[in-house]
Amino acid sequence: MVRALAYPAMVGDPVAGDRVLLNTNALSLGLGTGGYALVVALPDRLPPDSDAPGHVMKARYTPQQVTVLAADEEASPFRSVLAEADDIAGLPVVVADLHSALPALLAGILTDSPGARVAYVMTDGGALPAWFSRNLDALAGLLAGVVTVGQSFGGDLEATNTHTGLLAARHALRADVAIVTQGPGNLGTGTPWGFSGVSTGEAVNAAATLGGRPVGSVRLSTADERPRHRGVSHHSLTAYGRVALAPADLVLPRGCDPGYVEQLAPLAGRHRIVQVDPAGLDEALRALPVTLSTMGRGLDAEHDYFLAAACAGRHAATLLP
Image 1 (cartoon, rainbow, N blue to C red):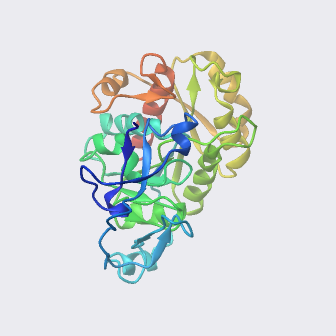
Image 2 (cartoon, rainbow, N blue to C red; image 1 turned 90 degrees about the vertical axis):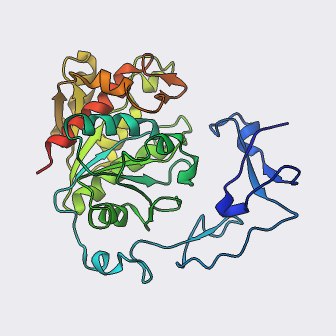
């Protein structure tokens, strides 16, 4: 017997006694599905037909492809404003490698700017359905909205790519700050370029292209057993050092281990290394309505990681008009 997760919008509502068709691939490999098999279909009872507006397909050309209404297509109430939008007018855009950084980034922003409207732009490097995120469930009411971009879906708004996602965050959700990370999960092969977090650098480029203010959250670890992630992760060094062609503010907590500063020093030719006072942020992290966890390790085990993310959020708040 296994636990299984069904998305009613895709397969209908299972009830006790239903036969279910399950995908157990990730579960059998011990990958990050939260211990769930996934329901592919209820063979004896199809979901009801949907007449929802929209003609954009996500998870395209798979048996599970879904129809969504993109924020900028004809039937959208935001069509007119997004058809004219060409920039994000200085919007601070905080980018991070992992979905686990999202609550900490939000805590850093709201600690100093509790009235800020913060939009989350979810890219498609991890989970595709936003519904899988426990973070988003716990943070309901603290975010101005969620924009799912690329092949990801299930947000308050849908967008084609990170660029249109940022435009939707700014002009449709009226965000004061945007956070960009992949959804839950992370693909990595252990090779220098084989990880989904390269999209962090691409998000920096998108934000800068649209006239935003990119802020980079740096992935730190004192507990990861893998040498490539100790100190400043090679994910951050590669994404910001090789992929991001536009400058960003890369944030570290003031008073942090000097080794972090030394590791980031080669990136200072393009980016600005900013050290932010972390006073009060530990308390803000512990007060969050979600249990912080990254790679199975909590706040105390990976304190530097979460504190650095909160400092990146705090720095983004200083860029508000």
